[in-house]
Image 1: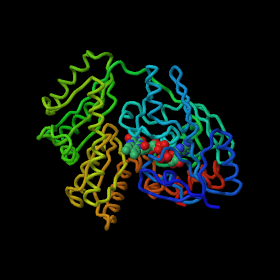
Image 2: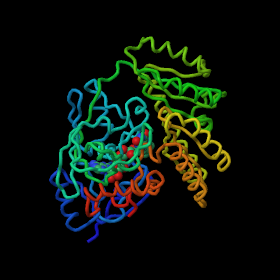
Image 3: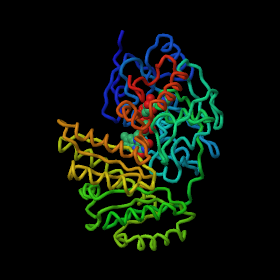
Image 4: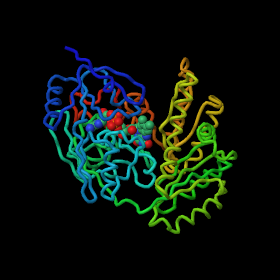
Length: 455
Ligand SMILES: Cc1cc2nc3c(=O)[nH]c(=O)nc-3n(C[C@H](O)[C@H](O)[C@H](O)COP(=O)(O)OP(=O)(O)OC[C@H]3O[C@@H](n4cnc5c(N)ncnc54)[C@H](O)[C@@H]3O)c2cc1C
């Protein structure tokens, strides 16, 4: 009998929509193991569902069963550590840590994501400029393998077979494929494996003491070049945990909602710095710094209060919303990138993006995002009747990012939608090494079928 599976288990934020025969949401680990044992015995594909905020279709099932971890959502906060069920939401983890004067450093923007999903995609975000991605904060994992057997792994527990080696791009963020190297530990392997190697049941995550105070800023520039110079200089500023970029077309979109953006501004950098106190001299140092950078000093925005910093956060998040509204109003199709390059190639990659976008999609693109990590998102507003041109351009960008030593996936993973990009980044023998790991841990290929490895 085929039961009706609720829509929320058949889609994610990628726009993909799939189908499944059944959905299971076990209340405990034994329930998860029972589902996996039966699926293994019957060779039924199992797609692991987190909260469905993924952007790559990784959790969208194309047949088989959906295994949702939503009921494994306990959160226990200790000094320096959170023990969190895979189904707990990031928003709840952030709130629980905050109540104890601590914080969980990675902040992958969409706080309705689950911890299992964040681990499986090695999620990162704006604060990853200082703190790195999820992988760095995992002390231990409890994982169920495809067979149903559960294992506890701690940081440093070496994998009990040789996973092989693949050369990795010299970037600060990379979620394309498995980062294989001799002596790697289990945590490095499971983090970022996109639900293809095991089911995360619980994660033990490191917490830090919350900073005493924070400075937020939106610094406007009349010339894009000055903004890019500032990124290069400011990357070395101690305690700076975020450098985000908005290009001129992004600011033009934002002006619809924020007319107070200075008329002369052609680029903006959003920064956040940790402070020892509200009157930390680091605040005054910013006045000199923005003068020296040739920014629109008098018209830039700075804040130390939580309310004002929240306004800046909303300002930053307004761009993706406005992009979606523009695309909807124009009946267009949004197509985007998630590539990163080594920081010394940042300017070159941006110049390439801009020249090609202006030639192919004039006035129909924005560039924004995590420039401190040489990782910006390009969004193209494509003609839905002819997505081929945008697809080809995005592919050209991916090839160029790889030529510059970069990655085809910095933070979202490849899932199903972008699985074809894996071949651009790795050679056939490197892909064979990754497939061997997949076969070893999931011999019947039941987990996450179609994700990373086209079905
Ligand atoms: C508006 C918006 C902004 C975003 N910004 C960022 C950002 O700044 N940085 C960033 O990194 N991401 C970002 N994302 C992407 C997304 O939020 C992350 O990829 C998130 O980690 C996905 O978590 P989820 O629980 O929604 O997972 P899902 O979408 O449900 O699943 C994602 C993948 O994880 C696997 N998975 C889920 N749970 C488990 C588990 N327990 N065990 C094993 N595998 C599992 C799934 O099978 C799938 O492969 C954004 C998304 C949106 C919509």
